[in-house]
Image (cartoon, rainbow over all chains, first blue to last red; front, side, top):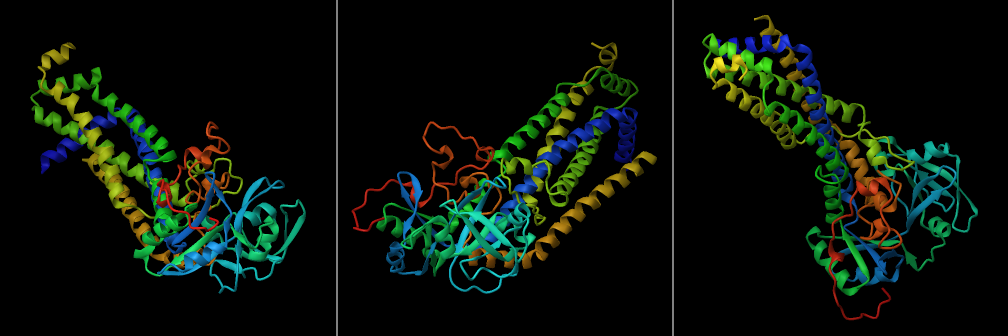
Amino acid sequence: MQRPVNLLEFTLGSLWRRKYKHLALILVYALIVATLGSVLFLTTALKHEATVSLVDAPEIVVQRIVAGRHDLTPVSAAALIEKFPGVAAVTPRVWGYYYDSLIRANLTLIGLSGQHQHLDLLEGRLPEQATECAIGQGVAEAFGPGLGDLLVLENSAKQRAEYRITGLFRAESNLLTNDLVVMSDAAIRQFFSIADSLATDLAVRVRNPREIGTIAKKISYNLPRSRPITRDEIMHTYDTLFNWRSGMLLAVSVAALIAFCILAWDRATGLNAEEKREIGVLKAIGWETSDILGIKFWEGLVISVTAFLLGVIAAWLHVFVLGAPALTPLLKGWSVLFPEFRLTAVIDYYQLLVLAVLSIVPYLVCTLVPSWKAAVTDPEQILRGE
Amino acid sequence: MVRYRFFGVVLLALCIGLVAILMISSSANTTSVGFAEGKRRLVDTLGLTDLALCSEARYTRNPSQADLFSAFQDFPGSIEHFPTGSLILPGPVGFSGTLQIVPATGEDF
C-alpha cells in the first residue's frame, strides 16, 4: 500500500515543480468538460421540462394542410372525428401569432372557451368575457401593465383593441406562458377576423392512449388534407430537439470535443525534453519501467479527475444557478421575448458517466503511451537526447 | 507526505461538491413535483403543445406544430434566416409524412 502512496507523492512533487503549466492545463481541461457538461445538463433539463409539462397536451392535434401550408380548419370536421370510436372530445382551437410593432416582439394569442377552474400558476383568473385577457410574464414586462390594467393591441383591421388583464401567469410557468396572451374564443375570432365556421386546428382527446395511433391514421385516411400530430410526436420532437447530438448542442459539443482532441493530441504526440530527461534520470538510478508508468498513471489521473470534477461542478453552477448565460443566447436568436427560467436540476447519471469516461480515459491513455515509449528506451540514449 | 495530504483534501472537497450537486438535483426533482402538477393543469386547460422558448419564428415557437417546409418560408430556394432555425430542427415526420392516394369522402377538408 505504501508504494502507490509514495509514487503519488513523487508525482505531486513533479507536478508542483511545473505548477503554473499544470494549473493552466487543469483549467483549460476543466473548461472543456464544463462546456460539454453545460450542454448535457441544459438539454437534459429542457427535455425533462417538456416531458413533465406536456404530458397532458392534446392526444392529437389535427391541422389542415393546403399547398404544403397550415390552413384554417373547418369546424365541421370536428363532428366527423367525434364519431370515431374511442374519441372522447374534439375541441376547435383558435390561436395565432401577433407581431407587435411597439415592442417589436411576437406574441402568441390563444383562445379559450367555456368556464375553467382556477390555475395554481395564474395570479388572478382566466378571461371570461371578450374584453378580458390573461398574459405571461414576458408580455407583462415588455408592455409594462399589471393585473387590472389594459393591454392595447392592434387587430387585423389595424384598429385599437383593448383588453382588461384579469390574470398574470406566474414566473414558474415562464417556459410555457412567457409570450402568451390568453383571451376568450370570441375575442380571438374578432381580433384575427376568423369566421365561426373555421378554427386554427382541432384538439382531439382520446380515451385509451393505446388507440391514439389508430385514430390518427383514421383521421388521416378520412380527411386526406389533414395532418394529425399525436402527443407522442410532440414528445419525440422535444426529444430530438434537445438531444445533445442535434442542432446547436452538436455545434457546441463538437467545438469542445475538438478542443479536447487537440489537448489529448498534444499529450499523445510525445513528451518534451524535460520530461524525457526526468524519465532517463529515473531509469538511470534504478527505477523500473512499471514505476515510471505508475507515476505517469498517477499524473494523468490527478489532472483528469481534478479537471473532470471541477468541470462538472462549474457546469452545474452555470446551468442551474446562473441560468446558463453562455448557452441561452444561442437559443434566444432574435427573440425579443425570451423566458427567464429556473430549470429543475435534473442530472442523467448515464450521461455523467459517459462524460467521465470520455474525458478521463482518453487523457490517461494519451499520457501513458508516450511515457511507456520513453520508459522502455535505454536511459543513456534518452539522456544523450537521441 | 504533505503534498499527498493536501491533494487528498482538494480531491475530497471536489468529491463532496459532486455528491452535493447530485443530492440537490435528486431533491430538486422531488420538490418540483408541485410545480409540475400546476404546469400539467395549465397545459391541459389551455391545450398547449409547445414550450415558449424561442418566439422569433413560428416554427421555432411551436416546433411540434410547424409544417415541414416552414423553415423555407415563401419559396423552396429561400434560405433559412432565423438564427434559431439552424439550432431547432424540424420535427420528425409522423402520420402526415406518407403520401397516400385515398378516395374522396365528399368532405371539404
